[in-house]
Image 1 (cartoon, rainbow, N blue to C red):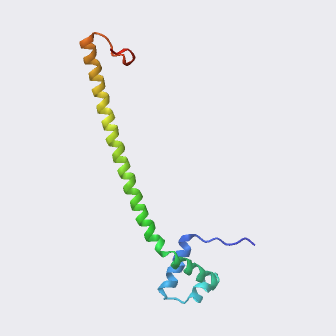
Image 2 (cartoon, rainbow, N blue to C red; image 1 turned 180 degrees about the vertical axis):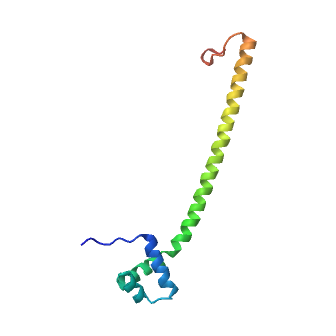
Length: 109
């Protein structure tokens, strides 16, 4: 016999129903065809890991802020590279106008 697999969403739905205490856990177990022990285990796991939800949110916000800052730095560097490329081209043109030849960095005196 193959072991039944339940989605996290389904487990969470049942655990939240248990926590509301509108229906006894035994009634939920009978209705869903799941053992009472299994439901208690899911509830314990849910409650034990509740703080993780808030920690992940904080970590996710920090990661997003860090990614946003990295993108801003990258955009600023790309802008600076573009500016330097334009300035470099201008200086090469001025060099050629003054000296009558292309600038050669290997043969510059």
